Length: 139
Image (cartoon, rainbow, N blue to C red; front, side, top):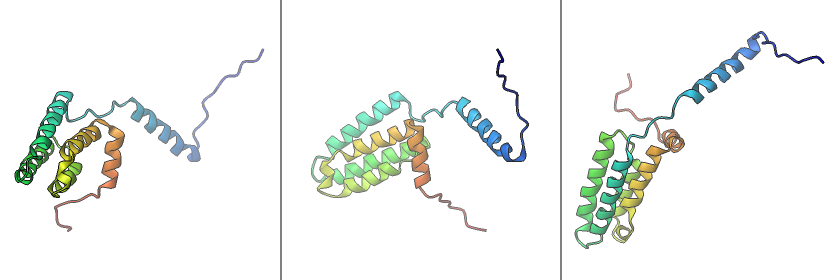
C-alpha cells in the first residue's frame, strides 16, 4: 500500500509572504499575553473606594467637590500605573451634571477601566479608537 509523504515544497517568490505570515502568527501565538497593570487586590480596593465615593457624592452640596477630589485621585492613580483612564475622565464629566450625579458613575467607570486593563482585546480596540496625540511640535 503506498504511503503519502509530505515533502517540503520550495518556497517561491509568491509563497514567501504567506510563509512569513505563518511564521509571524506562530511566534505571536507562543508569546504570552501582556500582564494587566492593575492587580486583583488593587482592583478590589479601587472598586471599594469608588463605591465609597459614589455614596459620598449622594450628599447634596458636597457631591461636586467630592466628585472632583475622587476623580482626581483615580486619574492620578491610573496615570501612575500607565493605564488609560479616558473612560474615568468621561465619568467625571457625567458626575458633574447635577441630576446624573445620583447614578453610580464613578464605580461603573472604574470597573470599566479595570476590565479594559485585564482584557487584551478590549485594550486593542480602545487604542485603535483613540487618536495618537503628541505634545511634541512637528518639525
